[in-house]
Image (cartoon, rainbow, N blue to C red; front, side, top):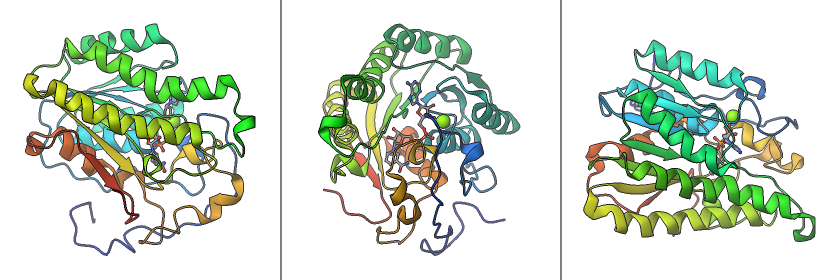
Length: 296
Ligand code: NAD
Ligand code: MG
């Protein structure tokens, strides 16, 4: 059985998919995505890099967050998972974490609620017996053709999930994080190459990069490292719950130099690296995982 450490051609490691047009209500479910995704259930092998760590991951039920949760557990971490209440995907990922012999704490709730963001941190600390890793990964992406079609609610919800929640959760977590702790934020290639249909979303991702670089300097003397990961086009439920115009789905990811969309499990090693102490001298970095699309 091959895993992420097997010598392989990145062009053909995963199939070049052409997803059919499809629609799911927000947030989408991995369980209903066509074709299905690889979150590492059968392909991610742990090597003890996060032994004994305690992590809170938002948006952890599906897509990239789910792949990160599986990888963290296989690397030896206990994991608290936040997601919009909707159990099917979350129960599946919790099962994989428990099979790895680690604790999974399920903390569903809506990150547009400021009080919930703060309670989430306290519940994660209680459920895990402490906290030393935070992954701000939840995201909202709704493609809209023209600026006039973005109403206040759409604009504010995108900023609430992608920016305000990251601030509130990080602030609430600080008093619990010992030296050696890490924070990793999910940015995007959109921070550098905004799509014309994603002006609200893409601008949050540029802000996440900037927040990451500023906060990394502020927290460095306390021994807390802050970094980000910028994924390229990754096949996840975000894309079919209005994250992309429907016409774009069959071509999704094909314009990257590798010529294919990424799978969620291909993101996991970047988050593991930035959370593990092996990256002790890496702070304020945004690690691009884009299939070769250039970033500054
Ligand atoms: P996904 O749909 O699997 O995950 C997003 C998750 O965010 C949802 O499952 C949901 O649980 C959570 N979420 C959304 N709104 C929420 C709310 N109000 N309260 C609580 N949770 C909420 O999609 P994904 O593609 O894995 O996205 C994960 C992150 O990766 C996002 O930040 C996204 O912007 C980023 N990203 C994705 C891609 C891509 O191509 N898929 C590219 C660049 C960046
Ligand atoms: Mg989901």
